[in-house]
Amino acid sequence: MTDVSASRSPFLSLHVVETLAAVLPVRDENGSPKTIVYGGVERHLITSQARRRAERVHARNRANAGIGPLAGRTTGLRTREWALITARALERDHGWDNEEAVRTARAILEATGLKFGDPAKKTVANLTKVLLFAPSDAGTRIAAHIAAGATEIRTWTADYLKAQAATAKPRKGTRKQSVDETESGNGENAGEKNVPPLSKETRSAVLAALAPRDAIDIALYGRFLAEIADSPNVDGAVQSAHAFTVHEAEQVDDFYAAADDAKLERKKNALDFLDAADDAGAGMTGYQSLISGTFYRHAALDRLQLEANLRSAGMNDEDAAQAAAAAEKEFVNAFVEAFPEAKKTSTASTGSLPAVVLAFEGDRPYNYAAAFQLPIDETPKDKSGKDNGGDGPAGPAAVRRLLDHHTFVAKRRADIRNARLLTYDPQIDVLLRELETGGASMVESIEGLSS
Image (cartoon, rainbow, N blue to C red; front, side, top):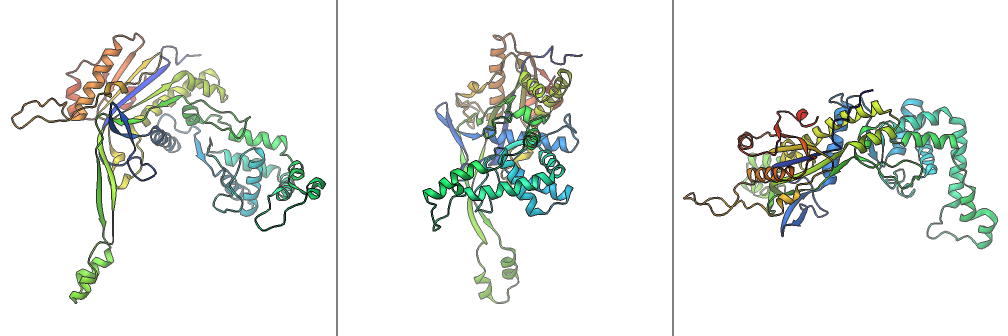
């Protein structure tokens, strides 16, 4: 057996400097850009949650499309709709009626331990209270088990729903039960005891379907499910930092006017000036916040945790090592390529490419946020060419800062090795060839960033 990881360090650290113009990748509850205060000044923020989802979905979509190192491998789906997904599989594959399928799937998942929304509210009645990250074929597997034991499960579902209805709390305006009714077995306490338990066979089948199994993205990003104690949680192998601007934040409130095509056509072709006057003005106006800036972002991959997660899912050592190597390549690709999709059509933000990517291995992860605690000052030179004390444009200045910081740290940490640099900016390419890079080698593709 070949040990794929024998010559590799436990951690892969990734660092990016990227410049964005007039975008809004993430927003707060008021629709404004997210910010933090760092180094005594306000900075724009792109949250790690937004980054992680973009990367996870990017990798999943490529795998499902048969593209990249994870092509054909199992991936996960994070949703509250597992009852509906199971019901659709019962309809599609086993010919069940929709209403019965939804009712049965919800009852089985609820009896397994998942909590659902208020039955009186149609929009949430069949949605779980929490998002559940499980292999994407979980609904199909649960549906197959239900169909195989349809007779017994239909009987159990009828008894379960009947007992559940008996325990339902009375709505406002209905008669309250007396103490005698409760003690005689018609009340809530007695009803809870009379709810039939799910068979061990069915519960085991549901837990097996919802288990992380060989879903690569669950092994990478982890999951936490508190509602079902015996459904395994997974510690994520990917550590993601919030991205922030290397300089002080600046925000623009952009006024926009949306035209009403029909109104403008009527105005254009009006024979009477009074008609034209009635159609003056835009169809809709408003403001949107936009940000520009150079961001630093960081992520790290715990290779040992990734392989441990895959082994826990049932892979042998060799398969886990091979799957982990493929997962690492796809993670690096997603880190560079993926981008949060908010406002993507109006800002084309997802087409951005990093100014520089720095990747290296080590015995621990390394976050270089400290390199930008002192904000970059973009004060330009005056007309005579005199230096006004600023750092110049943030992109090149940030690349210098990052590489200076890395070179300094690498001389003091013996475990840092196999450093690699990738740029998509010709000006930065020239700069990199002039700077000391702490032993980092230049690569020309994303594939070159991972060993």
